[in-house]
Image 1 (tube, one colour):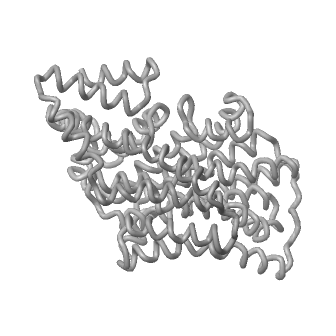
Image 2: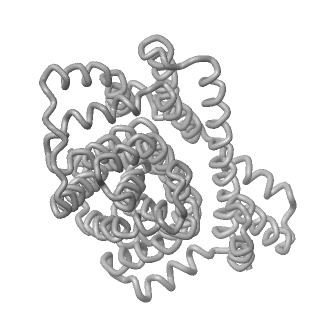
Image 3: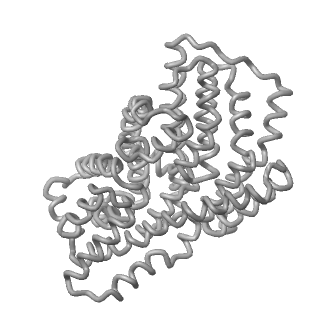
Length: 418
């Protein structure tokens, strides 16, 4: 019943948090449960020190955007690879990788880097379709390269080490970025684009000095987590303080008006995410109460009795789910369903977390509800149809990349094991 109500609410266009929460509430009332049970589970869903990192990282990422960091990272990337064929789109991918390590958010990465790079690519003769598709796809790195908000949600839900998840996300993120770089090079070569020109050592050094403060942030945040100086939540708070110092006193592009607007925007985005998490906790609790995960696991085991079949089924399911559902909500709903089988089949939960996040990230650029598509539409003014056409070839590339990551566990686990 709960699944049917949830599906109906989604079809009629209800916001994801409302669809999750209302379907859970109706199902619980039909079971004769008190409203207290619903309220307690809503509260317990966000009563977590770990989850405090989500609004902190969102705020830090937006502060870096309005403080001028994204523009400096793009300039450095251009100087580094401008001498290569396809150097400008490659610079866009590298800039997205940098910014992903600051923001932890896919839409923020598309907005920050795509807003700068898409016009630059157009001025250099690259097709509008390619420019939008590449930057929309590169934005998916925002939830893969640590510190990733979605990895935080998975770690909290699956009760696994978030530090290990962050470490595990590094190589897959770099690998996806490398694949996008190769695709950019091939397309630029095929279309006859010439290198932008080689920057002098003086220009490179000047650009590096300008961007160094932004480059240092992920070093401080991730380094502090990995060596045990602070937790991911404390690291997010450090990132905010660091971003404010850079914005006000180093780059001097931050003012009170920008700070107020950034705070307002971050509060709105954080509230939306936390509402989804709270509602999803009730949804997950009800599924567990009704033993639905156990029943589904037994059905799965009849067909997915090997790791290969199970992983393939998970990828297919998540690709479909990602088309309609927010990544954090999908993680919160499907982790309780999949995790018993993950342990049953001997799959490492850290590696499985990377499989889930990489696969769900593709949903960010998949119609009809891929969030990155709407962000790209907003910053370019193009129709949604044109944005989807640009993203489609990269959807195929990312699916193939996700399959490679899923079936070569060492891509995720190499650094963790070390």
